[in-house]
Amino acid sequence: MAQALNAAIAGLGVAGLTREETPPAAILAVEAIGNALDNAGLDRRSVDGLIITRSGAATSKDLDLDLQRLAGLRDLRLLQLLHGEGTSAIQSIQVAAMAVSCGMATNVLCVFADAPLKPGKATRESFSRIKSAEGLRGLRYSSGLFGGAASHAIAARRHMELYGTTTEHFGAIAVAARQWAQLNPRAVLRKPLTMADYLAARWIVEPFRLFDCAMPVNGAVAVLVTTSERALASAQPPVHIVGMGQGHPATLDQRGHDAEVTSGARLAAATAFGMAGITARDVDICEIYDAFTYLTLVSLEEYGFCARGEGGAFVASGAIAPGGRLPTNTGGGHLSGYYLQGMTPVEEAIQQARGQAGARQCEKHDLVLVTNEGGRMDYHANLLLSPHRSLR
Amino acid sequence: MGYRLMTTPIAFDSRPSPEPDFISKPFFDSLEQGVLCVQKCSRCEAVQLGELICNQCFAQDLQWVPASGQGKVHSCAIVHLAYHPAFAVPYAVVSVELAEGPRLLANMADCDLQDIQVGMPVVMRPSKLATGVTVPLFVPA
Image (cartoon, rainbow over all chains, first blue to last red; front, side, top):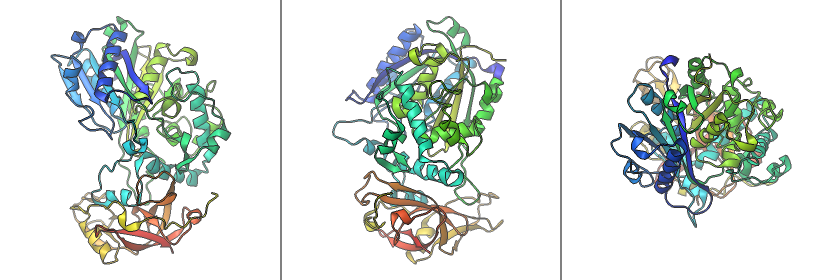
């Protein structure tokens, strides 16, 4: 069905991306929308679609359908609040891409905003909320497994046990992310980070130390999705969506099933790669959802950039760092860049595909893979972005 | 790991309580009697935990049956960030694979943190919370 996909990204706007106090998420969203429209050279009357996404830890008090009115958007032909945990941002762009492809809408804004940092409040309070204590799922909280770091730590420890993955392998991912971040003015953490610095940092949840975990910010990112034809006439170099997929495995938590070392990426890859007519070898740049170092490692394996269990050796080889053969998380990702969930990798991918990434611009940027991960590797979505409409 | 702490600084009775629901009420009721139960499919006999329909044959005919209470540590995490007053850091959370196959999340007792190893055999001890709900706790076998 690749011939039916006719969608591109023509506008990109951000707001906030700061550890400082900011207005609420909805206000940041309006600012990002304005910036995306300026970037695309469009006014708000030309917008006929809005898809809103928010953090799994946020509520309707933070961001809801009222954003349409706040942002001055009228007579929309498409409006929704979409929820897919960490995959929400890419899912919203996928829905927008389908909508513009079939003519249901023409210019669709996809916006994500979050303001988890509040004065006098520890960040962990924003991300360790008890989501559901009902039934057996409540055993997670009665045993003290709060927040994403803890649930992913259980998974990372299993990978270490099965494949001999080491703490230095996770460190290699954190160090590479920081090397990229040093080239990105938007990145929050830009001081050099050595392996010794990584190893000396405090534990969060073993096997994760401080720099294995995302850097939360307050901010918003808005993306304008339109048809490929319209994108060609836009103010910015076009970024075509040449493939996209999802994978939600619902792996069983019982003997014989490896929920800790697999994700939905394999399924999502088959769909997206098939749509674009490519293989993993054709990917020039990866922008991976890296809320934790381990997610980079397991995603590289699941996408087939290396075999399962070999992610540690792959990252230790320098492959993902500046100058490596598979530039990955080239803005510093969630680890050193900023954590706005699914929009962080999307924002950097657009900059790279446009050729606007400044000092960190990768020479070869014909095909950029962007991933989103949600739950504890329960939900996965991806996009394949390219400056070329067709890769065939 | 440079520290030696028992896994007992957890104030076990003030942990956030699970809320027994439609599916899990028999699980928590049996635990109160000291018995860990799992679900067995009446049609295909597959053993599982926390399902509405059989995760193998999809029949809606699961029966609660007693399990051995034995298992092994499947994975573990040691939490150093103080998320909740019931848990003094550091403490361990383990994923236990029951002898019958299903896995569940729990804490360990009677075991030093650094002695918890993936693969070690463990046995279940019921542990009552302040809410009256009993949850599984594991000790070295």
